[in-house]
Length: 107
Image (cartoon, rainbow, N blue to C red):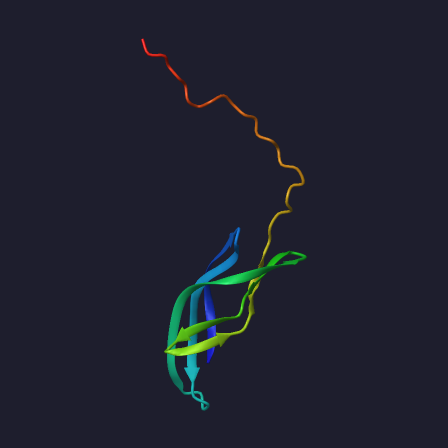
């Protein structure tokens, strides 16, 4: 079985990074005859590895059900690196303003 991922989004949350997309698999006979094609939309965990030009996304190993067959997908790297600007060393403090709620005495 061979397959591909049509990436829809990369989400970074406090719990980690996740990739959402459509996984498509094609099953072929040894002679190359196509047996079937199936696809599944799912969200899977990923790791972000720091590189010189940014962050590289590595999708973690997983299992996927395609055509009633449990397919074991090894870890793989997405083609593009995500470039993030350098983090600031100092964040400006916000000044507190007066309360946004005003109390008006009743007559």
